[in-house]
Image (cartoon, rainbow, N blue to C red; front, side):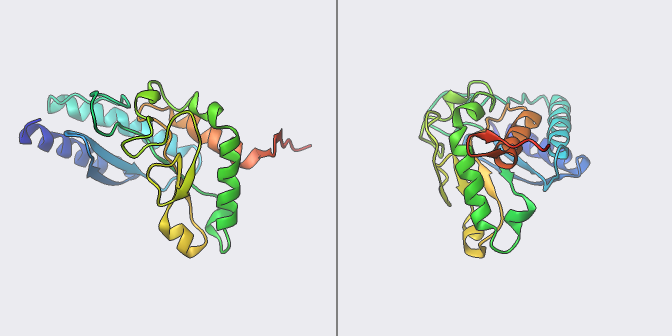
Length: 200
């Protein structure tokens, strides 16, 4: 891509951030022409609202600059990174002192429902999650501290502080945020072992 095209992408992302108040950052990514923006922090369903509105604005603004936006997880085949929608997640317990144990417990619950999550984490995600280019293999679950090649990454700072959040790196860039965030919450908050906890 030409510098003009790359500049247009950056400008489109900047304008998007200006009008979509919940965008907290933008940065260039590994593949040429690939940009990333971060939304949040958000509570509950607002993360989905913010992502859908931001996608809409990005596409409309990009039309003005005659730039095409793709949310495909591997828009250009080749020996480079694809595009994910890494999802940071925490509960109040995880953010409190001693919350690291709650982070591990939640991640272990996610490991038991890996296939269920992958099934709804975006189409063509198998093209991105190959076990290479900072991804885990789509067929297995892993986690680790500062491990960009794991299914779920725990930030260094969360380990150091003993509290914080984790990053589910499996969702594809074309994922439905309502589906992904609701399933993460369902798995980590409602399941105990193999049973669904239902209030009586």
